[in-house]
Length: 378
Image (cartoon, rainbow, N blue to C red; front, side, top):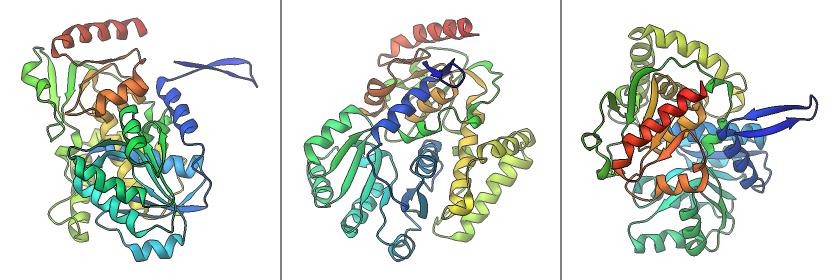
């Protein structure tokens, strides 16, 4: 918890742990430069809520902190070099942050390299990323693409990634900075009432980043719910994602039926929440406003899912980050490589309502510690 004094009232203000990381984020990125407008690329046209937290944090950072207009915004599928050229001129390109700089999520990395190769005349900023390459030859190939650009800033999201970038991406400006989701720390939309049930949620990813040592059946605990992001049960893309008709149909099905008529209480809650969340956003000044609105809808899904539980166990980095933003006690588990542990050791190691557990036999004791902590804080 961060304490600051308001000089106008001489009162001590208590800030959250998320706010402290947000201040570090601002300090880390303070020398990015000033630019009137930019392009923001790699919109997450998928249902992983974590990537939408990053996108929204980036939008808020660019518009509220840097006072920059996002004149062109697109996903991989909708990207047009010609349209971007027309809308931004020679202004900078901002590439979305996350955990896909490397050869694990190849499609994202290939797009990133193509944009870098074709835009040497523009400043390019890669927002905070976890960097991980399984194949040394691909690391060398990617480094060559990055290093050939005359004005590229690479933001690393943890100390391991930073050290790797300093070593291999030596012609880039390299910055160590937290995840951009922390830009949203202490925003009113995170001040939601919690009436948690007695159950525990294990937010469990099951893709290629799953650490097989932490399968739910090996936990040895009772009274817990195993699920991934609720959005994975609320599909919004069907078939060919390049088909605008399919996108619109799927989005209507998800937003009007699954999260509306079928769950009326969530519909009421979401309408109230969205009013608060959008107070400081001028959608008319943002390119492609439907993208940003959709990301807000995904953020609400994550908050609505988490507020039901008294404690959360997660192997998702943004499960951890959302718990920090919501002040929810939680256990943070490793993924299949360094991403989770390195992030925790770099930024969130001193958060009292979080335990990073690298040994499955420590989970039960950590649960008890956090439940005691929760009772003491009430």
